[in-house]
Amino acid sequence: MAKEQSFDVVSEVDMQEIDNAVQQAAKEIAQRYDLKSTGASVTFDKSDGKVTVAAPAEFVAKQVVDVLDSKLVRRGIDLKALSWGDPEAASGGSVRVSATIVNGIEPELARRINKEIRDEKFKVKVQIEGPKLRVSSPKRDVLQEVIAFLKGKDYGIPLQFTNYR
Image (cartoon, rainbow, N blue to C red; front, side, top):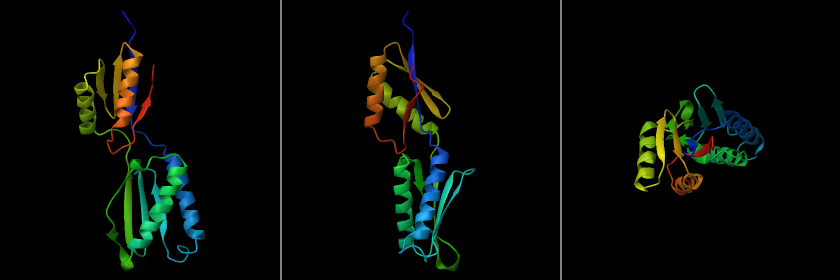
């Protein structure tokens, strides 16, 4: 009998890279002429997985988010990994915008991905294992077709393919 080949579909983000990007963005905000004296700030809470932008106005908050986005992209973090909330009013007429970091695949999304793989009639076995999916098949070519299929879809979160064996 042929040996089973498999890979995992995961959604993971390197928290240290996000921390580095936030620190770089904070430096740029402190040095940039148009943002220097506005009192805007960006913070990262590793334990909660939240990035918070505080600014005196919504326009300035959008500029700070753009600076942060450029730093994240430069560090290889997919922007889909951050789920931005709506701006909320803070004290003194300022604005606060928070983003949560998406880590792991939600159970509903995992079931949807599983169903879409089955609907395409790939000869694979898909198992949902907590925040990841394990896809296995006796043929590597079929696994590569599944990876290509999943890369062509947009699920709103970044997907990585690990443990390919």
